[in-house]
Image (cartoon, rainbow, N blue to C red; front, side, top):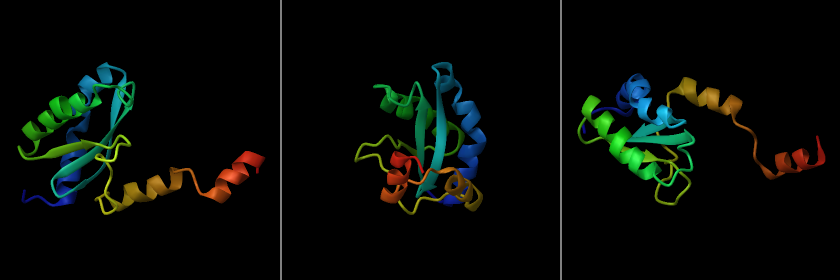
Length: 120
């Protein structure tokens, strides 16, 4: 695929509301995590997040629709915590989104966990 990661990210971000209709109708949502080398990394949220049919939803709904709208070779991976569906460390995320995530992400180091446990 000859597209740049940022081009694919922007295209997916643009079409995601249209693609999300099916998932939203089942009480779920789709969060775009990033892109890398023609692969789009998402996570299904809400009722779809822990659903046993999430792989089917990812491939037969999300990937199928994004392939129709963007490129027929696009691959979509639902980052669901399993070893085969992990988010690469060097995935493309626009700088603005990355900064927003850093500001809202809870700290999860050992010291932070201890502080939380003792109420600090």
